[in-house]
Length: 215
Image (tube, rainbow, N blue to C red):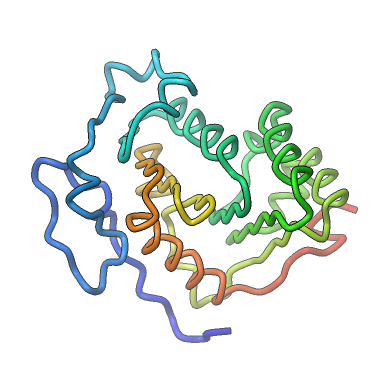
């Protein structure tokens, strides 16, 4: 485990595609130009019209501004998962405990015994407190699920992300704001954010315990 503070990048991934921020060696979240040129079908005007089918069909890089769009994107990622789901957040909200979202996770975990769900949180107690159904699912698939809590070295991380199969990623600019970016079917663009997750995971400790699970 790394005890040194991690230098977390800013929200360069959310830069306006028309005026893309210059790449920086210290900013692994910078998006390749080929991704930033992709269409952006979801805007503030479309937030009420967004749906999983439209989101799933969108190529490359999609920006979101609303909470509703963000959770549509979460469902799209979970439905695409075939091998690995890596999730970092400050805490898990009750939104993760909704039946249809749990069905997606259950389908993923039941599909193959080698599938893995990794969760890293600042507040691991939020799972037992706010997600009782998820706790039950985690108990059933305990060998496939791991929950970690960040140490002080990673407490400055404030931009939740979900990485799926090293090919798709959803990242929010800040946990207090719904603005986010979804990248699909692009391993090259996903790789820096997977590496970022691994940094956070390295600066965390196992937290899967009876207390965390609310047992």
